[in-house]
Length: 83
Image 1: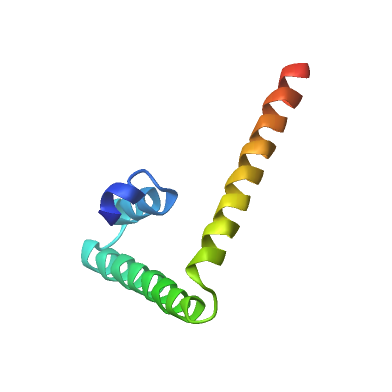
Image 2 (image 1 turned 90 degrees about the vertical axis):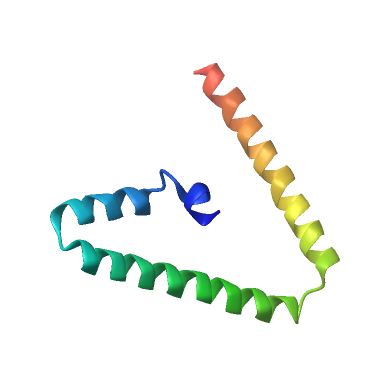
């Protein structure tokens, strides 16, 4: 699942370039370690946040961010069409 979600991401492109130039085993170890640390940190942070913020607040915050993102995108579309 993560592979499909991350396909084409810059970090994957960089890993492909590293594997083409350096020792494949060491690149694999480094990529796995980096992914482990990043995912492990996200899990730990998620657990910490879940103890302090309830799910309803997260939904409201996500909704507000989603609406703001849409408004900024709409503004940018209209702003670029004027130029």
